[in-house]
Image (cartoon, rainbow, N blue to C red; front, side):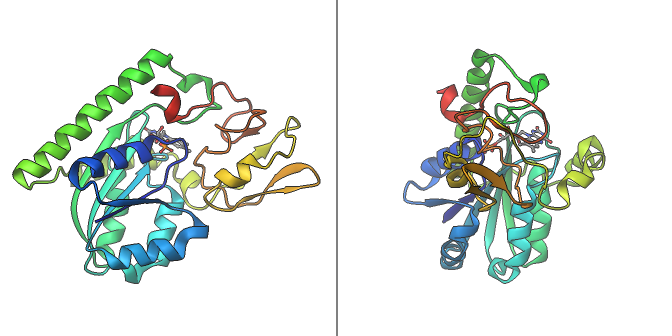
Length: 256
Ligand SMILES: Cc1cc2nc3c(=O)[nH]c(=O)nc-3n(C[C@H](O)[C@H](O)[C@H](O)COP(=O)(O)O)c2cc1C
């Protein structure tokens, strides 16, 4: 088996690695990025079972994940896929959003797991929680993943969270419909503020290759995957997307 993940701030990476560590310590995990796409496709082609993990974005799978699935539709034929999503609060059918696409391209969905983790939107004051609350969230998430792995190992049955018709309705009407426009393409709205010193760290974080440094400043093109990796690691807190100011740089490593 192989694990492919999209992760901006490390939550999804952690959850996928933890699950696979418990199921198959030999399994390899790879971060989804445009620069590694060829290698990722080769790994998928070489494995029968794929664990695909990503954060919920507006009750949807990130556009980058859906785009990757669609652009490479032939690679999914005959694969067994387990979909996993992490979320700050509510997902509905976060796993179902990729599962339906994957089924269309010939994959069999073996299960789904939706795990609450700390929120990754660092430029929204409303979503910020105390460190202790986030640590407790991670502790509970770890317990859920351990329980899911136990169930899979002991009964051979995979959890099926987010895959039902009811979950589909919950995701659609709970949030996805109202934010639909935000998830139909890559975002053009990443803002680089005057505090940018052109250090280039953000260019290394971006899975889309959407950032470059020009004349001593970071420059964003129009293909932001909204992962928040650059926003949450910029040493000058100069980058924003949904908000206007960075309130907290959310990174999974801070909750350890
Ligand atoms: C653009 C964006 C949209 C999000 N939308 C949702 C959402 O609809 N529901 C939710 O519960 N969490 C939402 N979140 C929170 C993330 O899904 C959550 O924090 C996730 O664990 C981040 O994972 P990562 O660290 O692997 O990127 C959103 C985060 C971002 C950046």
